Structure formats: C-alpha cells, structure tokens
Length: 236
Ligand code: C5P
Image (spheres, rainbow, N blue to C red):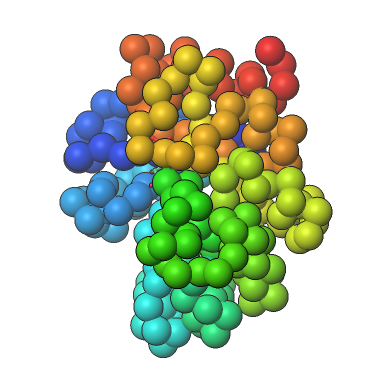
C-alpha cells in the first residue's frame, strides 16, 4: 500500500461508494469499514481490488484467539493490503491473527499488514477512567497497547495523531502509525475527539492517514483529497 491518504468509504452501498470514486484514479487507497462490508459482503472488496485500489479492510476483530485466527485466514484470502484487530484482545489473540493471515495468504503473495487499534479516536480521558476503569491516563493506555502490539509481532497500530510521536519514540519510525481523526482547519469535529490536521500528522510521525468525512462530505471531494494530500506530503 502506498503512502497516499486512505479514504474511508463510509457509505451505505457499493453503488454510492463507486459513484463517489468516479473522479479518483486507481492509485488511491480506500478503507472499507463495517458499514459497507456488512451491507455488501466480500464482493465489495473483490470489486475494489479488481479496480486496483489499495485496500484497508477495517473490521477491528476482537474475539477469542481461535476465532480471530480463522477469520483472518478468510480475510487474507481476499488479497487486501491492511487489516486490524483491537489490541485489547491481548497478545495471544494478536499472535493468532498473524498466524491466520500467514495461513490464508496465497502462495507467492504478500500477507496483509496487520495493525492493532489502541484506543479509538472517539475515546476521551473520562471514558478510559470511568467506563473502562483503567487506572492509567489515555496516553499511557495507548502507549501500553502499542508496546503489546509490537511484542505480538504486528506491523503497527491505529492511533490518534496526538499519540504518534510518543509511539514513534517507543516503537520506532517504521512501525505503522495509521491515524484517523484527520480534519482540515475549518472542518467539523463530528464524533471524533482526538483530531489533527494532515501536516500535524506528518510532523508527528504518522505513517498513513485515514480520512473520511473531510473528503466524503466535502462539496468537492476530489479537491479536498488533493488539498489533504498536498498538506500530508508537505507541498503546501
Ligand atoms: O469521517 P472520519 O474521518 O472521522 O472517519 C474516520 C474513519 O476511521 C472511520 O471510518 C472510523 O471508523 C475509522 N477509525 C477511527 N478511529 C479508529 C479506527 C478507525 O476513526 N481508532
């Protein structure tokens, strides 16, 4: 998967997603999340793959190790580039996910990269303390999950831009820091809490950015994509 922004295809149907993608060429990366996948099934992935897009299949698996392993074996067979699990599932579950991916990857092909979700970018300090009953700060929890993820052999994490530089220092610059919650300066926060601009993502050590509504809900999505790409690449 190249380093261009990953567009979150959070649409109701394949038809809507493909209509949205019309102005974009095949070099873009797309993210298929639960909404589109549960509606359209593996066929949406096969159709996107046929067109040549880089694909992040964002299904955030979190179950017992054996179930995650079997599920990952299936996902590897789709030939996607990037998949993920919740790091909260534990080291054994993450190792099992890798085993499943290795098993399901067709001969001669590269296994999909695997990243762990640390804390969702919609999570705040209060939730960590009062709902998850974690006796550590949000930052400490994210860093802890990042270390476990690396220990389990994963390629990186999903995290907020605000945590990317601390994770870089601990886990190294090449460890994937895939960061959602990206907004242009005048953009709405929506339900995200830990948000940042594309250039902040670059300067903080993000390796990939995931952008949904800042592109999909823009008046001119292609222009928004170009602007975000140039800010991400440091050209503007
Ligand atoms: O529209 P927006 O840019 O906020 O979309 C962000 C996308 O990234 C959504 O598809 C969301 O599910 C996903 N995501 C996230 N936070 C994570 C992992 C994935 O926002 N920690």
